[in-house]
Length: 316
Ligand SMILES: [Zn+2]
Image (cartoon, rainbow, N blue to C red; front, side):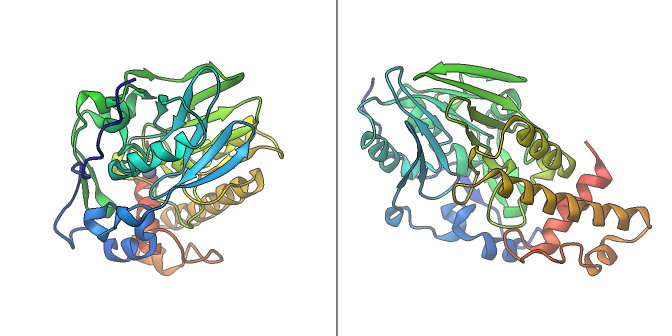
């Protein structure tokens, strides 16, 4: 394997001039460093520590900044799910070295957002094979705008792009584990995949399931609220009460947590849908407080309702 490359600055993330998008500042304040790029948050990656959380057997969760990383190690090589931000690559690789001598062979991208794929060029440059849904690769080949955060994500160079893509699913047979990677989109984006380690009964959901509160649905880039609800149902159908969940963001979770999340999204969606059916305007729907009963956490309420509303009005 080639030597580890130096981490590069997060050149792929640029913040647009402020003030263009409704609710951005509040959304930013609430989500904070969880989702935002360093240029917008002044995030100091030097201070980020990578926590290694054992999940079960040879599976681990790494937490630093950005999406949770899943890792499985063993005789057949090292397989990771998502790779956070480019400036964290050396720290992530160091954390993995604490688990195994083998460098990273495969990187699965659950979707294309920068807080899950920022390390792609570094890991790809070190020889890892990147795998994603076809739609996610397509997004990574061109510049993208993540409107809610007024953030541009530049196209990746060839070494940061997936070398293998799939439309429906792909199965890995590694380290005694059957690993199913399957498409559940459009949901959080139009290229969402989840990763199920069958024998260990561990599911990495990407951002189809998160624990920070009202979830970000990237509706302008193909995300869809009905798709989130359906994806959660599909994931629930394929798992059981014993399954350990690695959410896109937040702590290790249970199937109960997943179902509670799905119920929250479905309940709010139904309230917004009823408002639309009753002929109410967007402002009237917001005023009806469709998120009542749920904590004001995560995406700012008005911005979240906007994403749900646009999903329902524009459809898939
Ligand atoms: Zn995301």
